[in-house]
Length: 139
Image (cartoon, rainbow, N blue to C red):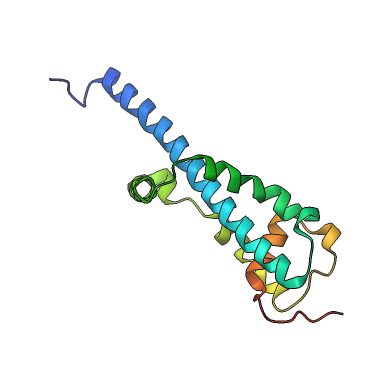
């Protein structure tokens, strides 16, 4: 029986764990970007902004197509969540929505003031700060 104290076995297990970590992290990143695209699209529609011309949709929209190509089943999502929860590297990972949360304050209740200057992350923050169905105040 192999021992976990074996350096060769430990290297193999570490390599397998790293490979799984990369795949799980990639899937999670794509899910978060796809969710961002949905949120941005809804906010753009509510504001009457063409999503085809939006840098946020260009940045995050492709993730919807990537995720749609997988069999992203509830079982796979639960399995990934369980792996993330037990993995020290992925467990401390900051999600996309959390990364842009600090930007949302400057967009609350406001239309995009200089849309041509907004980064995709600004568009995501704006869309999180905007409440679909509420009219935007125009300057």
